[in-house]
Image 1 (cartoon, one colour):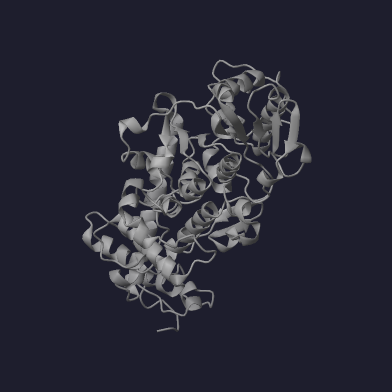
Image 2: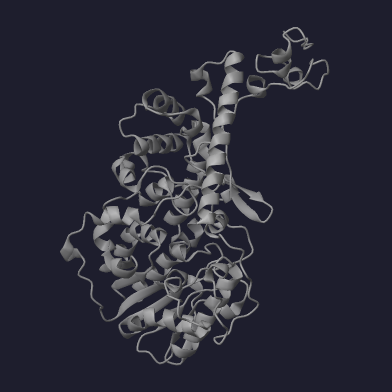
Length: 498
């Protein structure tokens, strides 16, 4: 309880500090002639809509999006049963994290627990194991990984099946190198034991750094590299899973089942469903949920509900963007009308940007008459009980980097099959052009708060302001009532600026 209490006290102190900063700035700015409406055009402190007190992006439960879409389904739509000659795509890292390790002692136990989740699928069809690839290169997921990491990771130099599991897995999973070692352990086991099955096993690419870990099909004593499923662009499994589905369709499979509870995977599959239909798919299922909520969701029924789902998901909160509104509101805010072209081309044009900003306003308040976030900010302040400057929505300038990050995520999802369909059409967008910047070895989200110019908020603590280093003199303004010199004696100030 002490950690909870200290965290709460820390949060309260930060909030009080923020309120004090706003109050002080308001006092100074009003003394210098700014009105409240003038001040609403600026972010005196960063908006809490996008980042929390620790400067981490705000998050919501992503799975709510799929649950909202499932409200369109009938009970009889959940009629999944295992079909022969189906394809099963297994998101390795998403499933191994589901293994209950409480009573396990070695990595062999962890491996056995993972295999028990997938063994039954080998009896019915081809099984594709898709791995996340981990490298030392900066990634847009760096921020999300730091947010999830609340313990200092303990790095393993090697892992054998007999290696003991750490007593606290919270010190193991935050390390990318640790996760890579576990994936290699799984890859090696499957490569050795997958030869005897009736159906082939496809082992997805584990790393780009070594040819030993290429995407390989294993079947009845034969192995061959599936170079067309390799990728040096997409490290995350969620962007390579659609490639595996499409490859299975090209080999004649008509039913595909994806084992992943990652909302990003489901969003990508739903978006690419028209392509899958062109290649002969009849049913596409995703195994979602955990424990008692586990179910097979028929994506071949749901895909028509929202054609701009990558844009909706990215703008309202995904792994690399902040939470804005709710997923339920997102689906009701006319996304087809306002987000029709968001992410479809490699450039974010002013009209598309304007519509995305308007869409987010409709998500937050469908009855708003504001056409941009700066107007919406003022509208909320004047017409919402209890609103204050320290917790308002951002200005249009402040929301811009969020929209750029959302565009990057949506574009990447929407074009993740380009390299598989027509390599010549591939156009990549750079994260540093879309709301990110390099900070040493990390890619971090940028901010663009519209802050007050110094001359509106500066005050000094000088005794007489006789020196040129006086903050007010340096800002080119006269001293105000909040300056120390004025409080001591109105006649003591030697600031020549009047």
